[in-house]
Each structure stands twice: as C-alpha cells, then as structure tokens.
Length: 92
Length: 426
Image 1 (cartoon, each protein chain N blue to C red):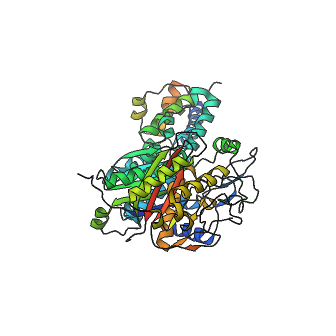
Image 2 (tube, rainbow over the protein chains, first blue to last red):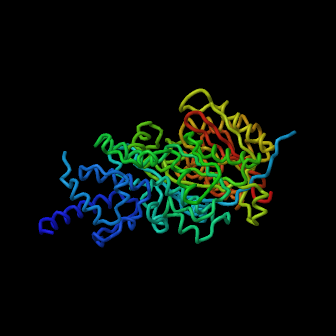
Image 3 (cartoon, rainbow over the protein chains, first blue to last red):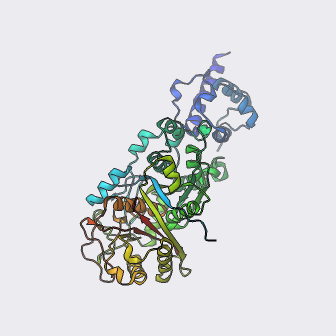
C-alpha cells in the first residue's frame, strides 16, 4: 500500500467519523476508533443504519445497497468500500 | 343489564415540570408559591415581544438518561421520565429493568411485556424534531430528509417510544386536542378500565415546544402576557391579568382497576371518579359557556355527585381575558349556589400553560392537593376580577374539606374535558 493510499484512507476515515458522529443515535467517541473497530460497536439499530446509509451517500456521492452495508463488519471494510467506489468530495 | 362499572384508582404519578421533576419538589413548589416562569434560555428569543416561559431543567434527565434517549426529541425524553416515575411508584418496575429500557429502543425484547396501555395527550407532537426537519428541508430540499424523519415526526412517536422502552403491551395511541389533550387521555384510560377493556393504562400528557417556530407563532397570536416580571406576569382570575404564558413538561398517571391494585398489593394515590367531555361546536379559539357546562355536568353525573360534594376545582385558568371570565360563568351556571362555597384554584401560574401536558400536570397537582388536604395558593391574585364570580383560593394555601376535586381543561378547537378525582380511601 502506497503512502498516497494511506493518506487517502486516513482522509476517508476522518470524513467517516464526522458522518457517524452526526448520524449515530448514541454518542460516539471517534478519537479511539481505528479501522479494526467493528461497526456493531456504534450501536446502530435497523432504522439508524438507514440514516447512516443516507448520510454516507450524501457525503461520499456513492450508492450503498443495504445488504452491502450489512455485510461490512469493521470500519476498515467501510473505508475500503468508499475508497473503491467513490470517496470524492461532495459536490455542491 | 347495566354496563360493568369498576373502580379506577391512580397507583403511580410522574411529573416533569419547570417547578420540579419529581412529585415532592413539585408539591413543595406549589405549596410554597414558587413559579417556574422565567426568562427563556433554551433558544434565542430575539424578535419575540414576550420572552418569558416555564422551562424544564433537564439536568436530572441528563444524569439518568443515556444513549439514544439522550439525543431523542425533548417530548419523548420528558414522557419517558414521567413514565418511569409513574411505573416505579406503582410498583411495576424493578431497578434492573429501568437501566435496560431507558437507553434502548430495540433492546427491550428481554423484558416481559406488561399488561399496561399507553395513551398520551400532546398538542404539538415532537415539536423540536418537526422544527429541525422543516429547517433541514428548507435548506436542502428532499436531500436533507433522513429516513428516520418519518417515524421521528409522528405524533404517536411519543406513546410508541414509551411503549417500546417500558414494554407496555396494551393500547398505544396519542390524543391530540390542544390544551384538552391529556385530560382526554385520562378520560379514555379511565373508561377503558372502568368498563373492563383494560386493567391498567398509563395516561400521560406532554408538550415541549420551546423552539423559534412554535414559541414565535404563539407570541404572534397575541394571548401571551406582556407584563415584564416573570414572578408577576401570569395572573389567573386577577383583574390585572394580561394573558397566559407558555410552559413545557410532562406528567403521567398510572390508572389501574381497584382489583388489580389490590391484587398487586399497591397503595392507591387517588381515584378517578368521573369524566365528562364535549365540544363547543362554535369557534376554533373562543370558548363557550354552553359547551363547558355540558362537560362539567357530564363529569358530575358520571361520578354520581352533586356540585356541593366537591372540595376543590382546579380550573383551566389560563389567565386570558376570554378564558377566566367564561370559565367562571360556566362553573357558576353548572354549580348554582355551590359556586359560592367550592374553592377554585389555577396552577398555570406555576407550570406555565403547558398545552397538551396541562391536563395531567394539573391533575397530578390536584391529586397531591387532595392527598395533603390543602389547595396551592392562587399566585398573583391580588385583585380578584369581579367578573369571575366564583369562590377563589386566595394567595395563601387553603385547607380543603372532604370530598373530591374537579379538573377542567378547555382547549383551542372547542374540545372540553373534565375529570372528577377522589382521595385514596374515600
């Protein structure tokens, strides 16, 4: 993995933190989160997951099928998905 | 065959208000003549002619409520706390269940479903969430609307949220009838138990609408008092009254059949003896004597009592010109000569006008007054309006005689609800 890939993942991780802190229905302390942190640990219920998908699609300009979201276990899985499918700055 | 008529007792009380978030503090405030009205601090009131309201100190809720509930709409937070108090007081909760239920909306599956209904009165719905959602829509259009907007903006998100958190498996609904909402909710729960459709119903009232939109539109309606001193601005039945002032809060009464309470070995805190309701069927905001009298007479007949049997009336008492004179005339017409004797008090000068919560908040105050045998003072009644020709409680606490009390609620829309409440054991 190149230095620029690492920088790209770090940038996505930062933006992801802002989204999750905003959309989580519980208070999230993002400072201790790494790519190994499980998504379950944020306590999203089925409705909050829909909000999270909506917020991620808005922020990253991607489409995330619900089954894809549910198949991802860790923050790293989500970062990889966003790095591969989009991750561009939100337009407008 | 006459319909079955079971006795309906109150086994639990819950209260979230500007004068306290537990019944002991609320009673001390009522007896001590301490108002909850002050300058509003929860949002920027700039641009409003009136800037006074009765705000709840959410410190005690912040200490108790965790996770999702902490970030939920203020109405739901208030309703959940009032419910917790009422269920705990009625012996339905153990401490262990409380911790699980308060933070979690989907995790209640472990606890057993309780045979209790959840009927809430609310005038405005989840006002803070509605305001925020509309604001986001105005800024971003449909792209601003998250999927949870739909369930979070439902008026019945309140009864549903309470039902899910505490696993209340009976009826689950919200009654919307402005300032009469939660008196109607108590009436519905009362009837369901009395006639055998339920053994226990949590009847609540809540409104929390101190946001720039809702507060602003009330301000522009022209019914708020423009007197500057929060301690003196809300003056029910006083000749110098200048209008009402708004408050936020919640209250809950756990109603239960007397048989159920006896079977569980819990103490009754009071009793619901009768309920009457009507509609003015005349004007959306102007109250009418004939409609109010119909509701008062229906409640008395339902309780099987005469006006002279009453020890106390807790009035709707908003301190608007229109309400206080109309309500006094309605009491006079329905009571006849008994209006010279039965003391009439109003407690909106403590709680503020809490709209949909006012019926249950003031019913809790009325039950506490019956329990203690004392009516709270009528704050600011320095110069009783001669147009209000009833016997008014004065500015000192008034010892009450024996007998039940009446609680009036007369709302915008013309809906009237009247409860007759009794002391436990009478």
